[in-house]
Image 1 (tube, rainbow, N blue to C red):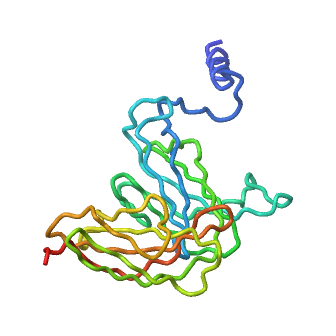
Image 2: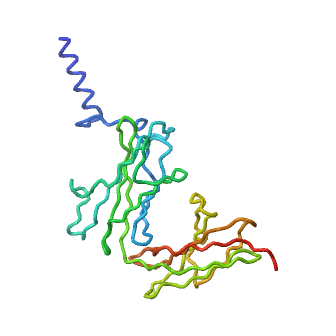
Image 3: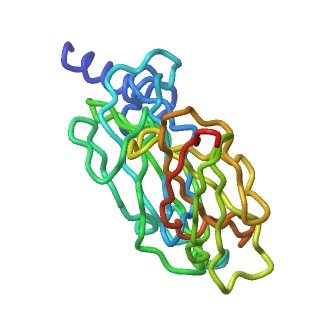
Length: 249
């Protein structure tokens, strides 16, 4: 009789709430899904970026995040595409937070660089966070189409009493889909200070940086931006040019 009671209780637990199969971890044991997964083309590479979740799926502080699994698939024409097929996604990077490899991390921003891409192909990425017990978050997805990108411009920098004047020469061959240029700056060689100076692509071939500190040498780079496949795509990065605020004559 005792064995029958135990068996009945076990079957009742497994069938709780009408679910069949394995038990589903409660939200308090599962990391929240990543909310800012992005895939952006720069030059001939995709930069896949995301931030680690700070809470579990139930909204409480996440304390035991262990890593991420990043998958990629090629998106096929609608009549052929099958995201749920077992072989659709391939694992491209398993990120162990104790020994992170294959990614760069800056202030909780994870950056995966994907260079094995084909022009004209749309790629979809799927990211899953997991904790030390192996419980997985809901997947996050992002997709982007790989297109031919512009070649690198040629950049020069001139120091002036008011800041730094940048001028560049675009690479030949750009079409009518040119959207402008993005300007980047860092302080000397400190890669952690690298920042985009232009929220919108600059029209023309000139930019003045007036937000500088006297005595600091800045390093600048430029990327051409084109509109392709319904998205803005950055081309190859220019040479580096340095400058700083000059003394008045």
